[in-house]
Length: 214
Ligand SMILES: NC(=O)C1=CN([C@@H]2O[C@H](COP(=O)(O)OP(=O)(O)OC[C@H]3O[C@@H](n4cnc5c(N)ncnc54)[C@H](O)[C@@H]3O)[C@@H](O)[C@H]2O)[C@@H](O)CC1
Ligand SMILES: [K+]
Image 1 (tube, rainbow, N blue to C red):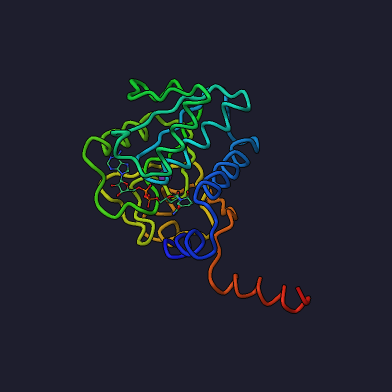
Image 2 (tube, rainbow, N blue to C red):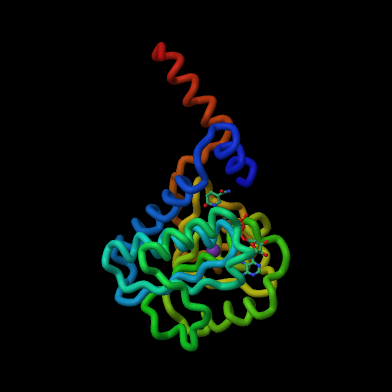
């Protein structure tokens, strides 16, 4: 998946911010489909690109008039480039991230954008404790791409992992959602097309255009 991401960005030339916007639009689609109560939404964003997907989602929710708060976890100066850009954009729309949450039970739904497929080592202890508090709160959680703390390839728990009600996974289902602890942690899995394709699919697009004489 990481190779497909990089190919789409570097070889095809699609901007990562466009891909992030699509992840956020797909998430909104699932959030708005009726399964979730959007009375008070918390988006939890980490420093990586998964966090950027979350910040973009928070912005789109705010623009739809939803009561949304953004918990940004970690030092802004260490955020991935696209993620700090998303943070700037969100701030320009008046979203001021919060740094801590005392009680997760005050929210009607939590959007988990702490870690995505980039997580390969155990989650830092403090974030593991936060993940356990979120699970204990028993609030519906929608995970972006993978439940944070789950190894996206093996389905192992990397110290602690979110237990999601639903997971919106981008482009293709990640193998870790289907094996090991994955099925128990991911809830209902929604696979959303965000414009990242495997090389075979790209070849099909090219062939079908050529056969039409384009
Ligand atoms: N490659 C891309 O440009 C795209 C990536 N996308 C999203 O980006 C995800 C992958 O992003 P990344 O590879 O940047 O990695 P992740 O966002 O999965 O982040 C994991 C990495 O960030 C570190 N990290 C994150 N928050 C931290 C915190 N608060 N304290 C300490 N360490 C922290 C983790 O240790 C780990 O190394 C995908 O799952 C998907 O959601 C999508 O936006 C589509 C485009
Ligand atoms: K996540």
